[in-house]
Image (cartoon, rainbow, N blue to C red; front, side, top):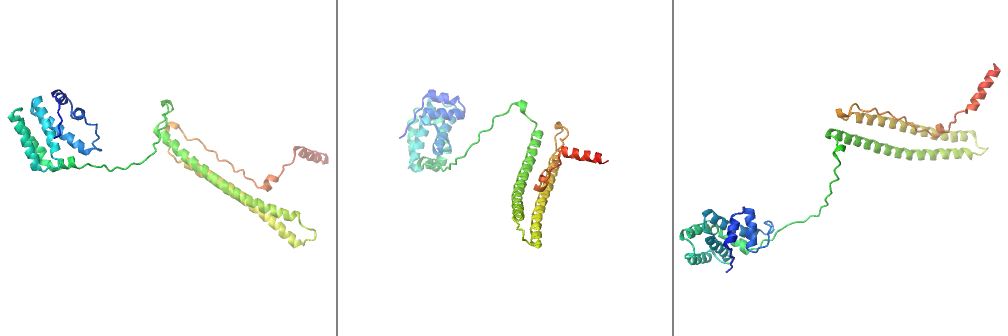
Length: 303
């Protein structure tokens, strides 16, 4: 039969501890490894029953030596229930009580027997299942990456929540404005390349025009060149208009964000003038200052 004896000093020390500390001390006294209730539910139930026996003895004021006997008896019947029916365990408990009659007070033994019947014997099948069946824990493991929090900035660089939220919304609008401008600029560059190819093709046809060409054919070639140039100009004007409209739209969007009073009045956002020119406009050269001066001198001499 399994035995586990505690000394009177160990029981006295356990009686002066709280329940969590007492459970730990009891495990060490019985030379049990530290257990996790989730991983070792069966061992946890057994430990709880044995500690409840000591608690009952402390509550009833039993002498320390009698508490050692009752603890030993509880430990034995806990292991006796393994592979034994209730009748066999009752006979074993009766025989052990007969042996303890000379060592303990009869009233205390009677009181302890009532405690065993109200706890252990009443739930005999449960304790038997705990002792006989080993419980396997079903658990799932998941690997997760944990992001380390950023370093905390000094308080001198801190901002009020309203100001921080306002700046975050402004950044969102500015990001949207920049992405929209980049997308439209990329689309315009693609159209611009096609227009340039059409104009170059039309000019090449004019440069390689033979002298014996008919007037009607010459007019058609010139019309194609002009049409290509006009299409280029229309694309440039359309891009300039869309750029100005987007600037006004995002300016209104920024001004619509509630601005905290601490920041004062909102800043003025000047609208940038579109500066996209066609090749025809870029090719225009303003007259030189010297030429203008000569023309004005000739006009004076005539007078």
